[in-house]
Length: 382
Image (cartoon, rainbow, N blue to C red; front, side):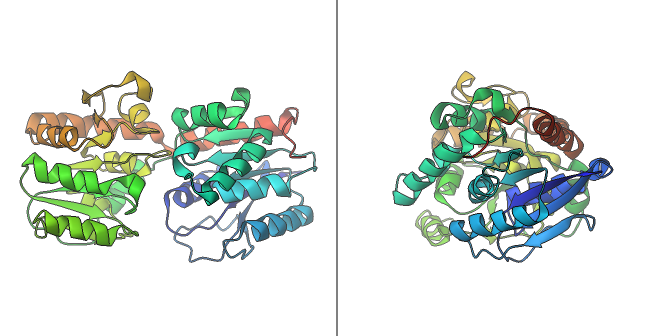
């Protein structure tokens, strides 16, 4: 008899965690003979990513409410009786803890962000930290998207180190290569540098715009993504007189043709969990420069811990610069104007991206699930 595994996420609307969940499920077909695979979507949102038709999907329509998510998920778990659960994102993780409370079956959570950096110091952030500290240490297993995220959970949220596994997000290089051959979503005249991400404070596009202005490099800067800081960034662009050279392209359903056509890609973030956009850019075969932020860039580009990197570093797979340092970023951008340097890092980036193959990630996720099923269950939420 096949054992039943319930995957849980807020929704499959556009986003990095949502794309990873869909990718993981697509590459789980090899486990279908032994497992019945189901998916719970907490919210009723437009679905940007498809899942295989052999995955049973439960739509709970919780309206972004933590309380409804916990209650409705617990009812679903009581009805379908999964042998184990695995959730993505903080709300789904907390709901998972409540839903599996006292059932004597393993529940696994996956943390997609650097929790300390992600949760603010306002009342909502403090409440979130409290919930994480109460629930996460009780999980049967915790999957972090980088070693930096794992260290944060262990040191700041009391998650037992023995229960934490770092598994980098999967990146489907072949899929990205196919999508990169499609027509670009926008037309950009001449040479340009690309960046992608939500227009929010942690992504620090304001620093990138300052760095671009100071760098003296020719051409344009194209930033794909949207968010609440769009107006502030537009004002900054106007103040610097860069209206004709910095393009805020908005959300792009397929950014890969645009990224593939760039001279290089820049990640200016102050904090990440695992920078999907960085590895996806590398998969298009362009050179990359990134801030050495929490968490992930140093592991990707230097295969080293963040604290082992200082200053501007020409790492094995790309260039790392200190966070929030426009002068250092400008210097790194100038160095990639050198064709020899740029081509060296473009080749290195593509080779490194292949290490994040979805098949490898799926295999590691299922190993954690199988170990949780077969081992003792110290992590009951009770």
